[in-house]
Image 1: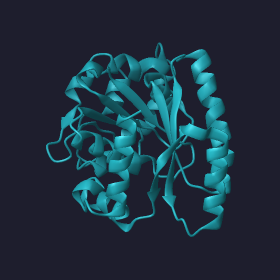
Image 2: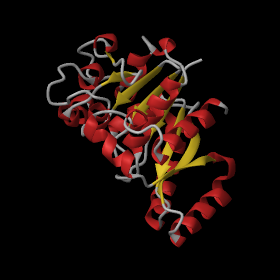
Image 3: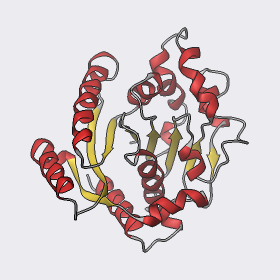
Image 4: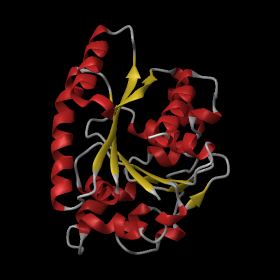
Length: 252
């Protein structure tokens, strides 16, 4: 059965795209068929997967507007071993254009129904906002993975996100659940980070992944080469952490 994860957090800079790209690569390395959907107009997941957002002609934007079928947008990448539905800056205008469309919250879910059975995992990289694009991601997903830094403001934002997920579950997607909270950019020397991490485990228990993603220069470098960190430096702490996360996801 296909598992569809929306990777989201309305706070920017918490490692959503890094997690989307590297989890996709790690699951694909484990022999799973994986599709990564870039639902962010910044298109960082597209670039981080080796596709130039400046030159790509067909994107998720046309899919959401119903102009083309999702099959014709899919990019198969032999290096990363996962498939990609790319994005570019055109997606920024999709929210306005989708307002008058029927079932605007379900556009992505409807498109995915054509191909989802081909994959073990579909990962949706959502934009850093609680907008119509993110809502499409949440309506299409079975579960939400929330990357977050262990700092005070992250806890504040988490409360808002959990409330949003509850509203989506009530109004649009009754099967939606929180898959897990992922601690990212973690520095064990930081006392506040340790304290926030402890609070997360107290409040969310088993919903907090055992895997912790460390601050790691190789993770920061890899997007510049258009590849997941796994293919930049497999022995780096960042690569090992995402391989560990993939194993944790597979063994749930």
